[in-house]
Image 1: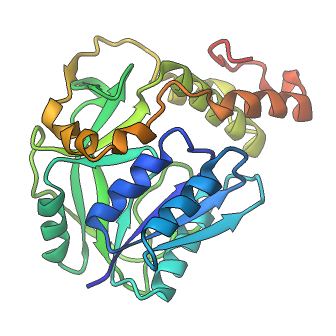
Image 2: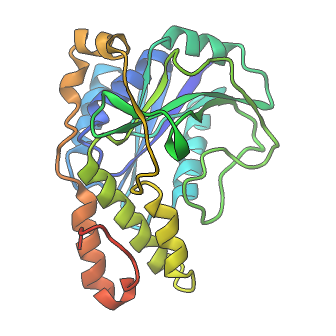
Length: 283
């Protein structure tokens, strides 16, 4: 078995040094696609590549257009060319915590036609606090599947993780509270707001006939306080990374690149193009 992780990267220097190294603790190889990166992501990727000779492969896409399905399929094709038999899906802001060996064992025992899902913890305000209820609580995330040449990603879809081509079924052998994937999506409130503002602007540009109210409503879910409750991440979930010095690669409060990209889109398309969108004070 060769478990190869696919990791799309767009200006993730604030966390990439951590997430890439953690991926290599439970995956055999890692393929990163550096998409129009203007920060230090390329240098970090090369450092990780030098530390893990022969296990890290770096692809580069200079086109600034965010084409998520194309990027994922490009990563998949590269992994296949390097001999992958099993595929792990890891976004650059995701860290597997607790039970790494158990997760790898689950992948070893994963049947063809299924994908492995484990608990997802959406952080909020810190990497040590996460949502436990509502839209962002008690979530599951697909982390691996057995490859099949019929599987692929295609089209112009946003935020779609599972491949198309076969009707794969979810397998959930782990319970919430045992560990899983820490999604540092909301570890910085500033980055969260900037990211969702950029998502809104990107959809307004890509789909000009899509109602602004519909775009706003979808991405506002991350900001509305609908009685959210939170829990603290157990200290032992992060401890092995602290002990190994890996947490030194995490800079939660680094400036979000999305703020500058929002401003660039306004300069390119004009402010009126985005009238009707609540961009949370980013512009």
